[in-house]
Length: 461
Image 1 (tube, rainbow, N blue to C red):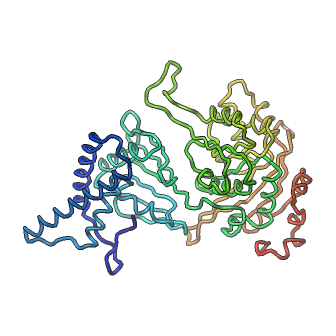
Image 2 (tube, one colour; image 1 turned 180 degrees about the vertical axis):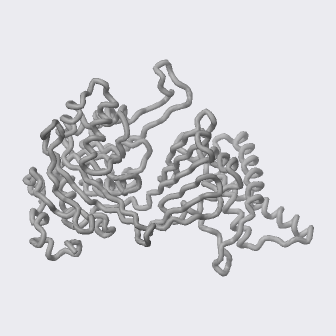
Image 3 (cartoon, rainbow, N blue to C red; image 1 turned 90 degrees about the vertical axis):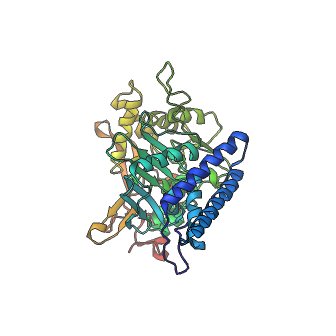
């Protein structure tokens, strides 16, 4: 559903009171039909809904003609019909933004304080997405019940909601614990991306692209760090798309975001795991019924005949089994992690390991992290929009882990460091350079002003 426009291209003002009335009558009629035909397919429901909506609009036109009132134009009728359909089967007034390929994020602080973030860095305040905060909560409850992979709830008893939408976007909402309902939708606009595309996007330079390509081929364990919204998942997708088509890969996520299984031409042998929160009821052990955790999925992946395990984001106790996989497996595992620098990643991971296993001491945690991790790739976000600049996201640092150093902390080599503009440029040769050369990496990519640098557009500026 695109933003409705008239013949002159100007936006059409939709009567949302009328849309709600038609939606309520359509939903009621659909519910009655489902009672009679419980096996009615989604496609059949949608066809029936369009017929019911059009019947309602036709009746409205007749009523207004009899009363001598203005009737909707064909453009108005189409806009109303699409709005009712979106309210029943989509995200209501939010749907036009989900249909816009340039929209990256949507934020709502109540029904009438709504902001849309675009791919060019603009944040624009837009029209209300509901008639009231109460109406927004009703819409969110409708979305939770219909659009998730399993029916979800948003109530006083369950005031937190996180779910994946049908297009792959992630929706998070909070009620009750905040003064007004809060909503965030994060979209994944670019899915089929590789390291060459990341160079075109100016997220990385050519030497780093060649180095990371070799790291994937050499089965290095890689942790991608950065702040929220820095593009960690995008870089992880790009790394995954450097894998051989024949590679058997397991992806493990709280909510599907990598979406590698939706690229069968690139990843025909991917095993996609998604955690499950379970129902509101709890069993004797205190766990929600039906709950499946990331930790359990990491352990299950090990018996699925996969050669690599990629964890979308490490947030909690799943850190320890992942580190064990990296430490004891064939290598080539990857994950993302919220951290403010590449060096900070080791502190974060060690803390998460200790949180998940009471018996893990700091010394054990740091030693295991140092043994398991080969590279940490850090993405920096620079936002200068407040002074008239722009928002940029790029890799600024890559460190290689070389075992335990002084003080029991991991020893590291800074292979790529921030250059004059903050972007990562070669700094030191990795200690394990031979591993990269063995899979075809040209060491001259690490020599500024030599070899492949000279003939590459992505070279130093």
